[in-house]
Length: 306
Ligand code: B12
Image 1 (cartoon, protein in one colour):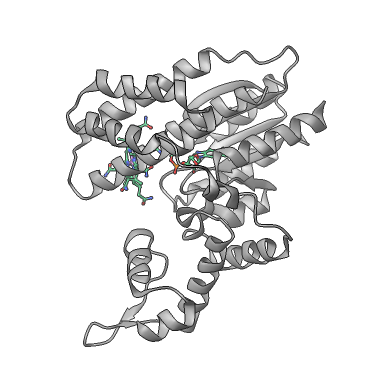
Image 2: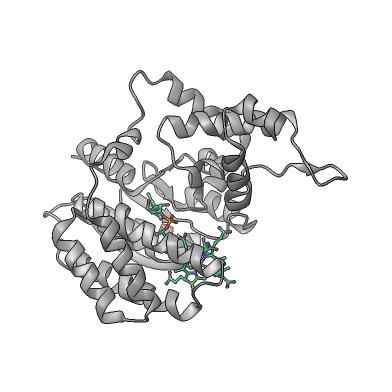
């Protein structure tokens, strides 16, 4: 452990946490149960440290296959300035920590109205990207962690999901895309039932001036493609949160690309999207790391379309 810590520049605590939480590497064990890292593990951990230094998210980086990780770090190193995502680290402190704490406490008490008040208050004080990335996503991640460790139950997760879903649906209703806005289809592919990432992507697309054809979750490729053709969509955004190893998904992505009219941009994001980085590249889909990156990409595409 000490040797690997020195070689990678990561502390033993970080090494253990990355292994436990993200399965970043899977070292073997000696008969005495000491970790036995391979050269490939060390290379991977070093690349992960570099990607994080460039502002990438651990949850995203930890899932990337080795070739994709190498490519990402090479791209980051080729960029003269800090990566676009690094700026997220410098966001000034906001009252979100207390909103987060209030939100989580309300969930633990199963107090739906209190959670709704937190969301309403936050909607007034935070910008929409802050609301999504600094309150809702961390809150959902905290729920996921607490649930995994048995500190809260499915009832807490369901109460929170219902309130957050209602907030997102309400926020979408006040968006009014301009006339002749380009259309985008937002959905999750077959086998993907986590909806909130897709709803967030829909909200962001609308706020970026796109007309959203929102299909919800668990859609076969043929249906997504048919919606894109019918709505003359210029883009399709897919949310891929769980599972990270569905053998059907690569086939579906290839089929979707074949069925989509030429020139339709394909975006994929969500916690498990990076696990499909290879096939996403093959079908010329852009792997988007965050909601704010989607916003930037859609702004650029809309300017080109216009
Ligand atoms: C709510 C929830 C559920 C709900 C979903 C309800 C619903 N209507 O959506 C229910 C109860 C159904 C559920 C079920 C399960 N869940 Co669940 N769930 C969650 C929870 C708490 C939130 C999920 C969520 O909405 N995330 C979406 C967004 C908010 O998070 P994100 O993926 O990080 O997305 C960010 C970006 O990636 C991006 N993004 C997301 N989508 C998109 C799309 C585009 C285009 C772009 C650009 C960006 C983008 O935006 C976000 C902000 O940056 C998470 C915890 C967590 N950490 O997320 C667990 C979690 C995802 N679930 C998990 C598990 C294990 C399960 C179950 C297997 C549990 C079980 N034993 O049954 C089942 C699987 C069901 C299935 N058939 O697949 C695990 C997955 C672990 C893993 N990756 O291996 C998690 C991480 C919880 C945990 N810590 O263990 N779940």
